[in-house]
Structure formats: C-alpha cells, structure tokens
Length: 442
Image (cartoon, rainbow, N blue to C red; front, side, top):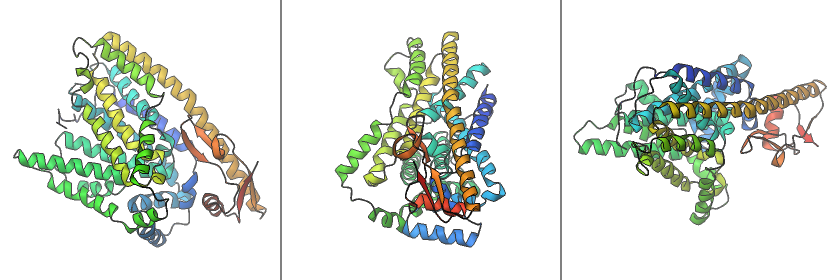
C-alpha cells in the first residue's frame, strides 16, 4: 500500500470532543458490563507464582496466547482490589485509541485534509465509532467481555497502530516500542501473521528502492509471531477438535465471510453513498471506489480471512472475524473522507450521525442495563444461598437460543448458568462465588 501524507501530530478540529464523547459512553458500558463466561475461570486469589504456572501450562497444553492469558489473569485476579474499575478505564481508552488511529490513518491513506469545521470533524469521529461498534459481528464479545476484549480488541488496536506507522513510514522505534510490538504480535495468530507479511513486504520494497528498511521492526514483530505460532499448546488443542479437511474449513470460512455483511451496513452505506453521489463530478464512479489507496484495506481484510484457513472449522468463532470487520471499516472511512466537504453533505452526515446515535443509545443502553440487573440479581441470590450453606439454584435465563441473552440480535454477551452443575463455566462461577455447586432451573 503506497503511503500518503504522514499522520498529523496535532488534534484535528472536533477530534477532542468526538473522542471524549466516545470515551464517556465506552467507560459507562464497560463499567456496567459484568463478568461472564470464561471471566469467572480467571478469578482466584492473587498469587503471581500460580499465575505463571497456569500460563506456562496453557502455553504447552492449550494455547500459545501466553501474554493474553497473563494479562487476563492479572486483571481478574486483582478484582477485589478495584482492578475492574481500572480495566473499564483502560479498555474504554483502547477502543477510543482505535477510533483515533483509524481516523488519522484513513485520512492519510485517502489523501484528504481534515475538515475545517469542528462540528464536521466531531461527526466524522462519531461515525467511525458507530461503524466500529455496529459492523463487527460480535462487538460485545470483543469489546466488553473482559476475556474477549483483551484477546481481540487490544491486539487489533495495537496492530492498527503499527499499520498506521508503516503507512506513514514512521518505523524507527526505541527499545520500549519494539518490546510493545513484540507483545502485540503474541495476541492473535492470523492478525499477527498478516502484519508480519505486510512488514516483510514493506521492508523488501524499501530495500529495493534504496531506503532504510525496517528490519529491526520486522524482527521484533516476527519473533512475537514465531513464539505465538510454535506454542505446543496450539497443536495439543487442535487434536482435541473435530478433524476438519480443507474443503470443510473453506465451507466454514465462506459462511463466516458472508456473515460479515448484514443489514447494519445499510445506514452507513446510505450516508457515504449519498456523499459519493454528491461528489460524482469531482470523483466520478467507479474511480471513487478506490478512495485514494483505501481499497487496499479490502485486500487486507480478504487476506486476513484467507489466513483463517489455518484453523479447524470448529475454532471459527464469530469473534475471530473482528479484525476483518475493522479493516472494512477503514475502507468505509476512506470513502467517507473522499466525500465533498460542502454544506449539503455536512447536513446529510450530521443528520445521519444524529439518527444513528439515537438508535445506538435506544438499543444499547436498555440492553446493558438489563444485563447488569440480571447479573446483580444472580450474584445476590448466589451469595444469599452460600451464606445458608446450601447448593445454589438460580432461575434460568431463557432469552435467546440456548438460554443466552442476545445483544443487538447478532451478539451473545451473557452466558446463562447451565442446568448441569458440572459444566465448566458453571463450575467456574461456583468456585468464584465460594459455592459447593450451582445449577439453573426453569
């Protein structure tokens, strides 16, 4: 991808207001979202030696994502000491940082300056935030679920930061930054491999053109990818899954790829499509589809999805497609920035953003409040029964399929207590709450 103008160091008009609004909402959403699912399997008395032993065991017998596991244990092990409040701040900040990186990177790739009006700039930031929230399939699993956010949101934000630096040719880094790059590359296998390949291509191209190649950056990122990929636990875990030949994996991948696009795309495409129509004289169709060099993001998204063939079909959870969704959001953002900066499109963009923001709050806030109330009642009832020294029986949550609460139709963010007291997640909850056993009944 040919780099364009460097990412400007100063805040753009409307940037601070737009990011502040995003951060405030994300902070509230993270604060009210309770622990669920695997989170309870990471709660235990804080003991660094025990944590390191479990992380080492997971690396050898379950997963190579050792730093992800380590970070999750430290966040949830410190829960009695207020770490969940710290997590809410950090996680909201990382999502806000992702919005910042996407806007600046895409503006440089599209080759367009920021708007002169602070209101237009603020609206653009809010639109990018709304796209990052609504276009991925499982935003709750990758942005609010503690275990999922550390495993997916954090590496995506880090790798997008690295991609932005590659595109702006700011690949000279100090030792601390190289260490951060190494850790970022140990989170998510296909995304780490993709960025290593992008870095390798950029280094070779720079070397052929007589420029200084980012060999050190390539080595630090590539080493993290190698440590992640050769973990014995990856292959141990794969042997526990149902055998999946290439055609079976391809069939699952095509289903995963097709489900990236759903009706939530329509309002954003309508706003951006209106802008492209208004600017058809300056940038006629189909030239406008390139959005500067933004079309490369589509290629990166497809390359990422192709790398998912390394996983058996059973491992293709919906949340694994999150990086591809973010790359597609980058392409839409480039298209947004190629729209004409006029009064008519400013009105279209502002009114469209206002309507989407109202819809967002009308759907998300009640769902998260309901989720928090269910969790509060469940925990209170559990503690009451534990105090009476009796097995815990909880009412079953029956909203959605398989007794799970659905969030915005497409995203599961709450796992109900299983009727089987020997279910792994149910046992984790019982252990975290000090109960002898827990089960649910209708």
